[in-house]
Length: 478
Image (cartoon, rainbow, N blue to C red; front, side):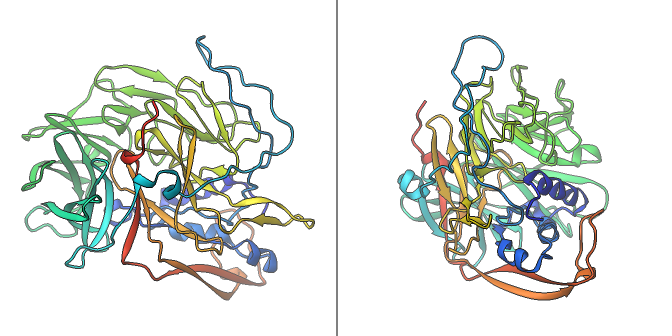
């Protein structure tokens, strides 16, 4: 298993996600990762893929040590020269030998004004789920009465340490099993949608509240194909949303019939007015275009041959693998200003954050010893944020010194402006012996009949404070 690639992991994740039920509320739990490399080598039978699949049903997993990441292995590209000619620029000659992983300093050192701590719970005990940032000091939070059951929206001011209730998040009268889903903040209003009051056919309703706060108002509801919502946005007069099969709809904020937006077939909302030809479930599909639904502008984007993951925002694209052995990379939507980021990788396809920041997994592998065993820096951060305009990296997550840790990102529909983690959570490794035949495996994987030692990292502690990085507080460089 140690020779499996990250592409293998993504394929396993994609297959599992396609068959897994939607998590209640479709909200992201803090991402966990496991360190199983050493245990796997001792027993030869730790099935990391099965462990990852078990996590997928409840959210998104980022695993360090599940498969070999080989941080920095392979040649690196020198940044391409920016040219005014159309098409992609010609890369500079490759450097010989493997590229050393980049140094990733903690976000609190790189962007001190953007990092703060907030309470993990409201005064009444409801748990906070970060959504996004409204300004350099204001964070939009969903308060949950139970797991992923959002009951109200609050705004937390990191400058003064104060909180205010923006609005309650009610459901339709008499609805059972109703869950508010993703929230999106616009210039004047905040909208969200809810699903499944009856647990039957596809159904969704939409709500709006002024950004300044007040009483939430129900806009309307939809059934069938328009109710398979995968992204939501808001304009001055309408709620807009895309669906899993592709296509974008709108409904007036005052209420009325839904209308399919012309020219948006096959598109998924990124952040209004931008839409892409890939959705969150398109793990293995490279993005091919970006469309401005207000102006009709279509921007073609093209991943280099061999790229395994490729996602673009309005200005920048991020990806992994380009046939040269490079890991993560960033480039302009026209292919210029390419930067290769050794030691970083993309797992699960979640690369874009607000302001065209990129988010990558940090392998922590810095080389191999004389036996060929990977040497891992256990002090490395869990993940890294990349500001491509400034060329700046910042580490995030609560690395526990044992090769484990976790982080989460805001649950807004558009790429969120915040990432967060609970610095007091620690991983405690627990191992058990199991019959090899009883351990679940991906379809087509050969079984084992001997005993297997299965180790997993159990998070313990925390629950008092969250460390938050607010990208709206990061100084702009262009």
